[in-house]
Image (cartoon, rainbow, N blue to C red; front, side):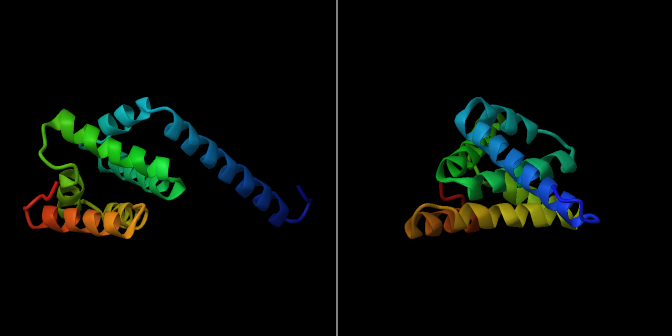
Length: 141
């Protein structure tokens, strides 16, 4: 809130955006119906929309353990509505056919967030192996 020639205003705007992001993520964590909305949003041919959903899911993973849970629930919901066998199939298929490098980056960031944000080392190994299994067509879960 200073009258600096741009710096003060930018800092204030940055703090406001950070607070808005936290409030939005907390709202999603507290309201499980957003799992369905995010899962349905993934059911589109629009790569830009899917990229944004995966970026949001990455943020949820990094936000908290409950955010991580919501991200995984979203993948489970999508798997169920599409009649898929494995929850990570969508991520691997999208990575293979991504129309842009930006979308591939968002997908890889999501994969990293899912693995890194797992609660225990054993959970991290299990998630990593699940991604590897999907990649080679031998889904593990």
